[in-house]
Image (cartoon, rainbow, N blue to C red; front, side, top):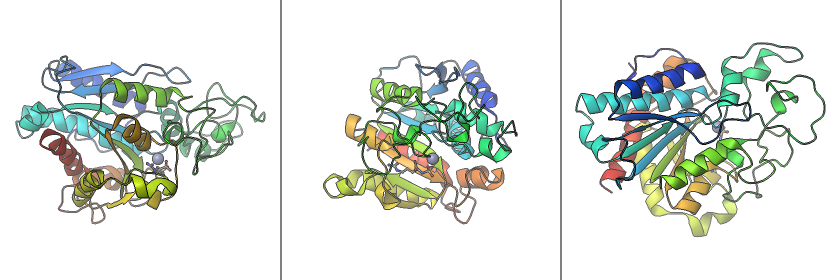
Length: 334
Ligand code: 0X9
Ligand code: ZN
């Protein structure tokens, strides 16, 4: 089973509580903290850092980040990140991962878009909106300046229904303003009013910049893909990076996903990994977990994909667990 023994999708409060509990039980190894800004609706974003002597933040060890749920409905992303936290703690304590943990620092943010996730995970029909409008929400809860009046929407304080919000994975500064993002407030890939107009992207900008993150993996669903920058076809030739490709290919050999540059899926601008790579030099990858569906059966999308026990998810090769370990090994002994 999973490192935590979990068998069903957690709620927001369960992710938060379990991270804080890991820290409380392992104070020298795990630190729980809240990212700089609360969400539009005022929720905290909870993260953990895991390292030997965790409080000694600037000890020069490579910093590896796994984050999930830029997109509200992509629940497995949060599960894989929280399980990774358990993995590191358990593996440090039983000594199987002690040397890898000792050489690295690990920051885990299971849910970047806490408002969206909360709405999707707690979905029930209300007013003019069906359960599906809530459950399949993608974006955050940013209000537009001039939305049509649509009554009380899926975001607490904001009318506009499920269309309301900015896509956090189009709001980073990397190539913002280019192809593959919507300029309309109701578009599913709405880029926002300006780069870093959203608390979600500002939180990650601050974290990644301040901590000089070496490698980051941002988790999404779905498609069984390991995506690397660049996200937009018109910059591919000069900017394709063989060292990034090599690590992407290595991780894909573990989870059985396809390793391709992001533009090979479709054009995007303003994404997490393009910004982090070109702004900080840190490697950034997007994993698209699960062959199909945003949050299908837990046994498949979380247990089998994490442990690598599904035919489509690197059966026998180790799954996402092994891919994340490769990121660590690459940082510890490049
Ligand atoms: O469109 C997206 O944001 C991602 N797919 S999803 O179905 N989870 O919405 C893919 C983004 C890939 N592009 C880059 N990472 N640059
Ligand atoms: Zn996504």
